[in-house]
Length: 79
Image 1 (cartoon, rainbow, N blue to C red):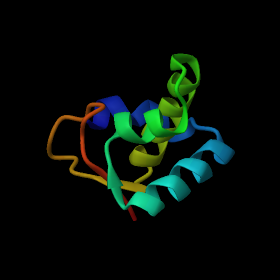
Image 2: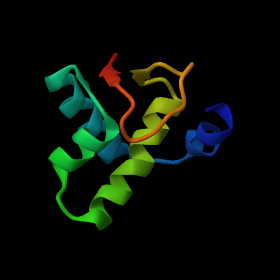
Image 3: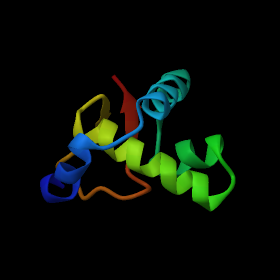
Image 4: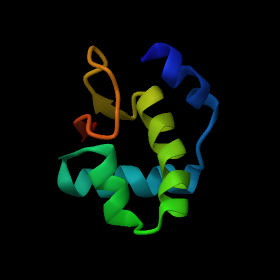
């Protein structure tokens, strides 16, 4: 997970990260796939959101169990 997340530490769109954080706070817990799919239906915009989501996880602004491999079905939660 560290190797995967490290490049994302310096990435992410601030406005998108705020939006993702606010939307996750509304549900409390989700998965990357569920959260991103709820915000955008088209794959292009979902891909753009994914970068910002991984950045939030890398910075620990969004919680998850880093002891298990990360994927689009990993449980994530608002901090």
